[in-house]
Image 1 (tube, helix red, strand yellow):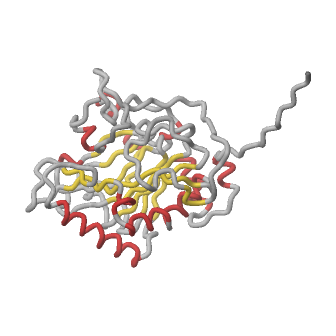
Image 2 (tube, helix red, strand yellow):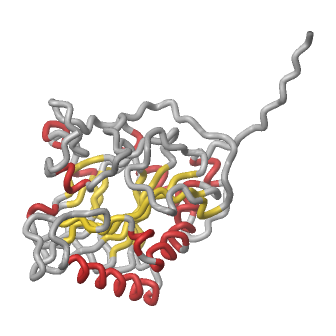
Image 3 (cartoon, one colour):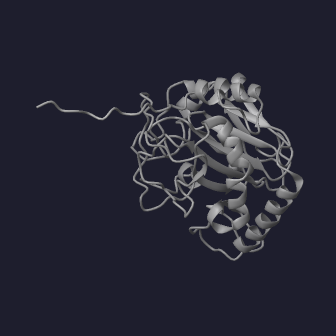
Length: 308
């Protein structure tokens, strides 16, 4: 008996070459090429003034609400010394679920930017709003994102928007050029505890001459690939530095592990359509701890507040 097999349709893998073949919506072709070559991109003054003003107003309201919080919860991650008089809000978790204006921003202009770099079919992964205060504890140490949420391929990126003017005194995002093409680092310590960062020994090997500090006025954006090695120094300014972050993937990148903090918007298609085939990159990726029960923040992990 002769068996007949249905011919599988050919899937499009969202390689840089394939993505660059689609006309851009927001970015220039040169900016897109820079992202694929170096693993990051900084764009000055992209977000319209009225949009930025609205987001800042909503953010100020959440900072005020955080004054009433005495310990971190599923909305607010607060740092040491937080009080009503002196709020130290390290992170507003899942802003996309906590206010309509944040979600409008995620599925609007930022999704258009993402489509220029991951292809026409874009999946929303998560959002967060990170703050820096005048405090040595606000350093975010060297790390790579993809080990936090590994996918079948590395067409995963995060777009940040500065809500306040950010220069070298405000602790800007810094990225190591071309690091997205190199091997991934071990982000567990010698005792097997997840730290979400490089060991001191590995961090000491980073060539600081190859680091770009992404500064910009309020409304400027940063973009980095999930494999790119990045950090941000502590702020030297008494003015808080909020950075609104949205993470996206190409629709053909599928998560290997449970989402650490899913919202009603997790895995929504925000541009294009769902695809039938996953693309698998042969390069390995380290697995994180089991976060199916939830996750705090990178601040807590790097400070040793989380133990897995």
